Length: 435
Image 1 (cartoon, rainbow, N blue to C red):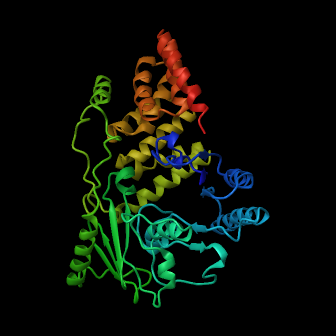
Image 2: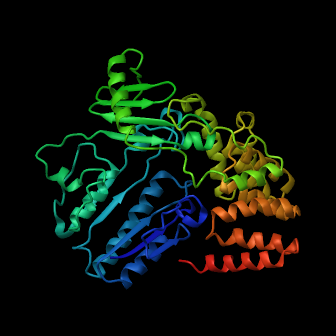
């Protein structure tokens, strides 16, 4: 198989540091402007001969109206289908269309997504087209999982499904005489990563939804589809049963912090030399139901994420004002400190930017993004030695990210470290040349 990926989000670009390993196994990994990924994908498909595997991540601006986003995605998928028909590949193709999340749009107090695990964000569309129009028009009403997609694609392509692969093939589910709901597990680490609140998990089985959080939740979705009436205070036995099932599922997985993400001893020493303290403190627990319950702080999350959205859309002044709102300012949140630092740097207010990015690193010392942004701001401000330390940490974690090597080369050059500068310029050129 020839393989390719076309993604429209920097969060899925391995070179950004947010998606390490995502490029593994792809002959082409194209992380490009979100408006161009389908155009590039169609061009790639029309130049290739089967068999091939292609993953296309369609990312659209969060500022667009929801109906506009849906229509745009529909149009993009249509372009791919038309290209496959033109190449006479459509009939034999296996096509999967799935979303990674929905949008709360105000439900349960959440404006966007990423915090809660209710149906508004966890239930997503899933369309599967098989070769030769197998099972065309078949609708599965039971709950299935995104982890059921991979075995279905392999089975449809006639490739043996590895025994260790999780999930059940959607083809077998579709051919079954009866549709039985499968237990569905979901987890959000974002509240912990961005806000240092509790992570949350959910377990949906039968008619019940159990949410593991500092304040546990239990809903009978057959009678309460909107999940508005929490039964946990009055249904202890059911709650304990579902909690036990979730414990059993969790036992199969290890969620210790990625050792590659943690600071090395050398990096800790470098930061300590700059005045950072407490870098060896015990990391926050990865266990859900430990810490601040996101339900109690959702307004702060909404304000922070709205400011992040403004920053991404280039509304820098509005974003800065949003980050400086009292609730966010008082909460001392990593994501807010990081976003405010980035915004101030874009306005060339480097001294203020460094102050907030410094706080972001104090909150998350292993943040590659914060080390990169503060390094860039310090370089602009003329603090070359301190800039070099932060850029060295970022460069070590982002070996294929050209810009960090270019900035580090600039810092080394101004410090008179000619050989080091030449080495980093070479790395920047190599990174630019990679697909």
